[in-house]
Length: 328
Ligand code: SF4
Ligand code: SF4
Image 1 (cartoon, rainbow, N blue to C red):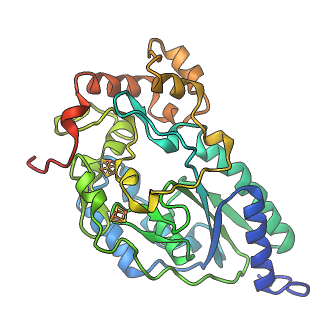
Image 2: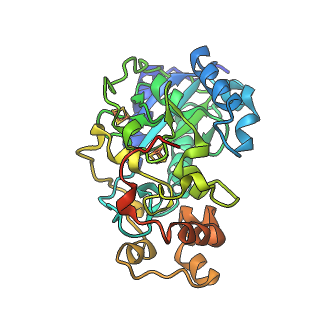
């Protein structure tokens, strides 16, 4: 597809798209040229799946061709626009009570980001007539952290999170894959983890392995959200009161020492999460739960899943759970 560059160069168009992204509320925006992800990255993904570190997330075994090349998701794709949204609202859950990871304390980010993404996609279609594209927020086989690095937004930390120099790792990533030809940013070349291993040491289940790998089978985030079965015994005494997600490896990261407060009000904790944090929350009936969390990521795990998690942590005193006990 030949794009209309009579008025604006691809550099100008890229600039306008980035300005529009920031005006919509995204905190950072980078661009990469669409193509196969580097073999080093696809190889790491293959090893992760082959080692069974994806636990029961069977979808990670499928669509590998789409995962490694966005041109198979959008025919004729030329650019991947990566959007970063800081979600840190100032909410710091009390470790003595049932707690929810910060990203899930407010409204479901899929919904919050999708509206902005569609507005941005519409804008791109207007300034690049004839272009086409799709939006992705954790919803399709896209190696989003790899693309964020390629688009210059940050590096992948030892706990496998994308770290931005400005926003740390309290962030969501989303992508627009478009046929528009844009000016790519320079990839982020350096890891700034240095000799730090704080996340590795702090992880209560020793889930963080070498080579930026997390074993989902041992990750509290996986076991409280994705796992459909009973919580395996290996987690006993290690949950640190998390009932949806886990922020430990993010909290200890020095790049999150001075988090910026998000401008998105919808990421502030909802009333039920506040009540939980104050100790005034009971999980008594499904209808009430579904009302309390109608607009929340907790619906993904559902009433029975959250009940299971609450039951599991009930007799788990957090005081004995500090630190990383690797004698498993
Ligand atoms: S989310 Fe929690 S359990 Fe999972 S790797 Fe990080 S610290 Fe470990
Ligand atoms: S805690 Fe240290 S090693 Fe882990 S992601 Fe942050 S900087 Fe990297």
